[in-house]
Image (cartoon, rainbow over all chains, first blue to last red; front, side):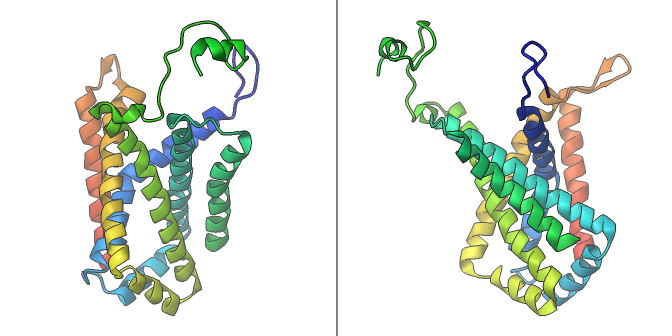
Length: 118
Length: 139
């Protein structure tokens, strides 16, 4: 997006949009996902073989794929955005390559997710 | 380096006074510490997403790989990691819903929707989604 007064292109609104979407998805659905795989599954409340069957059917469905993509990819963009901005909170004002590396984690992660899904 | 030295050395654009801030500024009052905790939730969001990414890879491979990934989740280290991640993600959730009416005020007709209703609406949606996920996973 171009700044109205300077006309200069800024990437930040796009990154913020990814951050905002990711934050909402992370807030709405990530707690229950962590609860399911991290706590209830090890407690034996879910049978792993049955969980596989359910997840595999979900993964085989286009809507399931889109939901998995939305959850994981936006989470990565959200987390990387906060981690990058934390460098400023700690008064490090890193050069561009640090920003590229941090957001690069989200970008590579997104490509890996796409590769696994489609 | 003091502010005036920064100006003289060209590291600061103007002679306006800028209060020097230490790297540890956020330890000073609880409000800042909670802010930093909120930002730190991102570390767990990232790490847990990577764990789920490995799970997705196993799911995409075959049943044996998925069962192997599922069994790694029972390792004591992974359980501690999951509990801490759950608390951190939960804290993110709480702060995010609290901020939503400020970031996205909602208006229906000429009436502004009260902040409390927006926050409770999000909690309601999260709880309904949680129940759907937990039920669908266990059918």
